Picture (cartoon, rainbow, N blue to C red):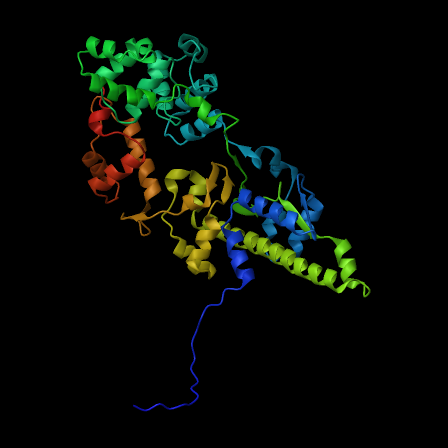
Length: 448
């Protein structure tokens, strides 16, 4: 056995993640609310940081900043009163029951008259989500027939929150169990006729009346107890989530422009008092050391936020460029797109794109969408780029909405209809998407 001593030179590659890189990646991954909390925490620990929230837009300063920025886009400074954005309404967005329902019904393929009736019904709901207005008054007011009213109300009753649009509590609970795919005639009869017995836990009386076992009765009552008698409350002002869009997309002169939403953001600066201490030669060395440490921390935070803003803007612009048909025509026209596609075009790692879309929102003419919404897989079709799975889901939803309720479409039939339109999709995939849309099978949708 030989033991030799000597020097050997080798080359190897290793990734060294600096503290600043770690912080930059962490901040990129944060949502707007999480970033605000991080800034507040840093301000409490670091006296060098001055943080001030911007609540109004100083357009002169805004334009000057854009001209100095490496994100400059000539379209971003094209501003006039006709194109003015109402930041009061658009930025501090609070979802309400009525806004949610108006938005979701707008995705349905309805005629202008049907949409008008649906919007009127939605505005007539109370805060609990019930239609307590006399339906004959609505029919008379809108000069429509009862059949159109019932058809529009049925569309609303299929929206979320489950049970919305009911005229009484029994109907509310029955809507919920049907939307959940539960087909139980006895349970529906109990809900229609014996809510008082349910409320008083008279299980033996119920089981005797409907000739069912006590265990069957208990199982049914467990289902009833899991339902929400006031569906509208779940989207009340107290529980609504404030979504602050990171970017806004507008169409000006036939082109879509993307700009960062700077309203209600923190403006970070370094406190001048501490700068003077560093300049002063007679200042205490330990004080200078402390200030330098905090200055480095503040500078890193500001640079990380600037990097975050830059990355988000680049991703947003690529999304708009890739999904132009969506921004022109709506959800049905969304294209399949992968994060890897955006990463390759921007020269980023795919994980950077993943962090850049996490919890980030975009305000469009069709509403607010999370960046992740625009990424979906492709289904084989006659189109060169394939068809987005989101687009397929919308097609399935539209076909089921238009079906004959007495002869509902099977998954096989829907697959055949899509094949005729040039989209090759298996029956099991139709079933999977239908379940994700919370649409029951054809046998459970059948109306007699």
